[in-house]
Length: 450
Image (tube, rainbow, N blue to C red; front, side, top):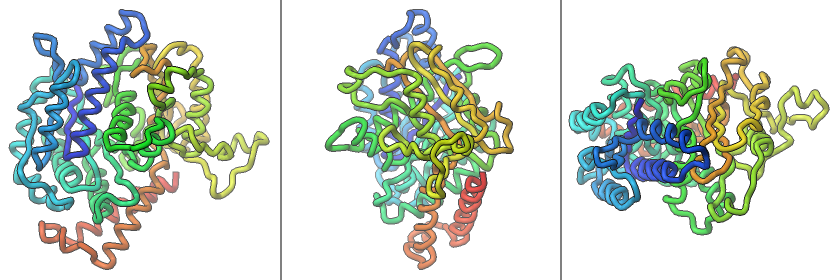
């Protein structure tokens, strides 16, 4: 079954390009596995992400949307110059005027004005698929087009393709501020997406920036560096892997299997992503890894809510481990509780990759049976030059702090009515703000009481 990415705004289009580029690069890499295994893997990947022409060209299953033409033109040009794939140039839409970093302008003005044209592009892309699994809109929360129009398009997709799945890839802005009204845009985006999307997969720019600095050893970090790390993490999830459903086989419905594993209740749909190892290609050539070592670190990253190997707080432990005589857990070191987790193993020697550490019932909420809280996918086919790698998709409390922070900042601005007139002039009402705050306060409350 096929997945269609909907690349929204400058951020969405740049990450979408990097995602397709890393997918194609992975297909060309051989995967350090037998030829038959690699052949099955490539066939499954191409069905998901690419429309293969009679001449063998790979065309990304994507719709590119932005209110300014230069970003899309650059994205199309970069894809044309890349090795092995390209976009369909007819699957793009742009205008000459942006959304001015204003969510309301994108949602109430540009979205309705161009809805028919945008959905026609989506329809044409859907018709190219033999079987549609769902959509992955890629968008930023900070600006106007990605957030406002991205939210509008997500709602339109839900209305038109009500039986298809929707996973929004959402980029959390830098805490130091990219746009002065980014907290408003973020609150409005998250609250509205929570009503119409099946799940929100969140990447925080601050965390990915630290990965680039501390793990990739990049001195002058660019947006492209950040986007490439995000794309690698997304590829590590959505490239084919075997799932245990009666028999191990490559998933034909990756989005459905993922959501079934991680979103057992519509009140809990905020997903985070961790991958290990993460390092520069130069360092990778001189590194060796063992599955016990990788999984020990990945498990502690989950428990201590660490996003990478650097700086893991090993003193944070589960209650069962504390009672076993290890260090006590202080009030400031409470462990990160989960609704559900999915671990994906890729690479050789999979028989050494034991997932037992992720099965501990203490990791999870009490209202979901332990056997429904944890899932495993795996493949002996290596991903993107990593001989062994593990990815953890988690529905947990990890986003509580940044969510509470952005809601608090937005509320402080709203309480003094700062910039509110910039939104109401496009058709919003103050009640819309209040409803968004209420929605996210309920989300915060739900995750806090796991």
